[in-house]
Amino acid sequence: MPEKWEEKHIVFYDGECGFCNFWVQWILERDKNDEFMFASLQSDFGQRFLKERDLNTNELSTLYLWKPHQYYLVKSKAVVRIANLLGGIYKISSVANLFPRIITDSIYDKISKNRMKLVSQKCFLPDQHQKKKFIEI
Image (cartoon, rainbow, N blue to C red; front, side, top):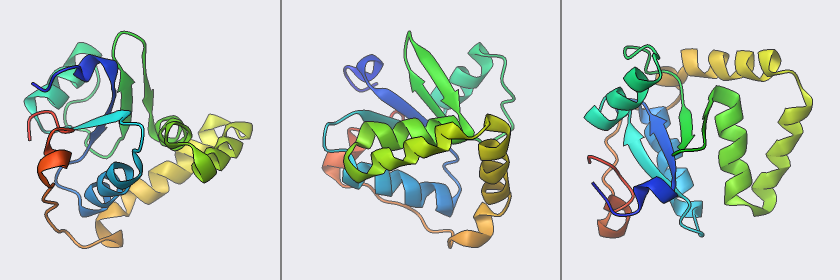
């Protein structure tokens, strides 16, 4: 287990989804303040996270953002918080908070349902520095 993971924001994602892996890479490249660590939902760590919150351990199409000992966010709320934490121009995503969650999550669900068609299934290979940002790689 990497050191100080409890001080980071943990992004839980579908480790077998090319679309999800694309966005993990995207976040990694923009994480200038070293805010994030990552764990696939299929990993032991990811499955434990889901079980401890009585969440469906077979539901892999949902993105979670967890700040240990504080909160966890789901779907569109997680996406918006990630963008805000990245800062800069990405903070504009906060406008999504003006809309009811039922609307923003329905957009999230539509994208999630079609995610396997959006990006080719390719394996992401992190470099040495990036490997340190993954829990159970």
